Amino acid sequence: MSHAKSHPHHVAIIMDGNGRWAQMRGRPRLFGHTAGARRVKDIVRACPDLGVKYLTIFAFSTENWKRTQTEVAGLMRLFKRYIRREAKALFEENVRVRFIGDRVRLEPSLVELMDGLELMTAGNTGTNLTIALNYGGRDEVTRAARRLAHDVAMGKLDPRAITDDTFPRYLDTYVLPDPDLVIRTSGEARISNFLLWQSAYAEYEFIDTLWPDFTEAEFAKVIGRFGQRERRFGAVTA
Ligand code: FPP
Image (tube, rainbow, N blue to C red):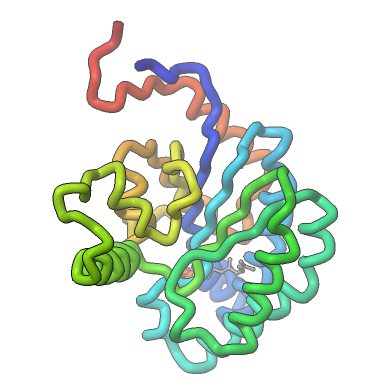
């Protein structure tokens, strides 16, 4: 099975480097996150032309609560503002928005906006934008295992029916295909708990550019490089 010369159907992005981008300008970290949110808009808009049907972005991890109270509160305000301000445009651009991650720890007012945007765009058929918010790969797999164990205990699921095809139905991403390409900006070569199960066969691109400087042109270039690679999924070339 060779997928050479194709484009990635599902691209996932770890948007790293906002803090350093702001520090380099002598500004507070939130200034970088605000600039980062503007990049999100442009990258989402670039997807249809690049043939990217699914875009998944890492906005806030289960580990990000360890940041200062000022930064966490600022990020939460930014997410709320982004949803309020962008909902109409996302709807009109036929984007379907979903959120993954554990909503339990998020403020009810934010969860309400997230639910509203999901519902409002549920009928859209263009780009599938998934925003990972309070998301961690281990946390997701653990929550899935908990629900699975519950179904077994209730007699709804036969343990022999648990396979690597059926297990992912319990993940937050159950309706999404696996990512073909994972991009991380800002020069760090780490996965940081992002889409652990789903990225088993993904290609990785680690890019030096800080997220607020990541342009549509660079995005297109990275997508183009993907087409040059050959993915064998463990098989040999025919
Ligand atoms: C990582 O940079 C970035 C984040 C933790 C936040 C990502 C959020 C955005 C891009 C803002 C908007 C998102 C949406 C969905 C509107 P960092 O702070 O770790 O940067 P550093 O490594 O340079 O400190």
